[in-house]
Image 1 (tube, rainbow, N blue to C red):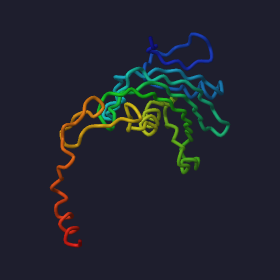
Image 2 (image 1 turned 180 degrees about the vertical axis):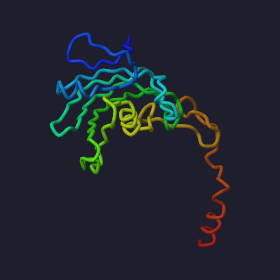
Image 3 (image 1 turned 180 degrees about the horizontal axis):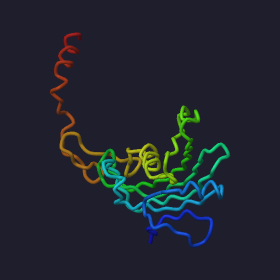
Length: 191
């Protein structure tokens, strides 16, 4: 069973009871230099609302946050889980693995580093760095929405909608699509 706690720890047993708030205490990170990250985001977490993503298991996140001497924070994390999709050809349910390595760079405001395309701003006036939104964005961008149930999936018949993987279609292949009649007429005139 997945833990419902988030752990930022280099010492055994230090736990924060935030199931999905991926929060790094910046003062502690600056003091210790590096913190281990471990979290599990439940499949029904509100952060996935509006994304149409359906996870079949909690998304496990593990990695390290590092305080750089320039005042920047570098987070390297591994994201693992399973997601339910529909086959793009036959619409059968398919479960695909989610395996992504992410690197997040947070820079202090006004340091000039925000011009870097991959850099994000550190929050001002708070002692914590919330990673939830950045992780959500990285997961959404990394996922490939076109899954196949099998490489040779035959899909659905465009006329009757039968799943061609399960049965043979009774549609006549001689039936012509009336939307192409004008093009057929032009082709016949040319001949």
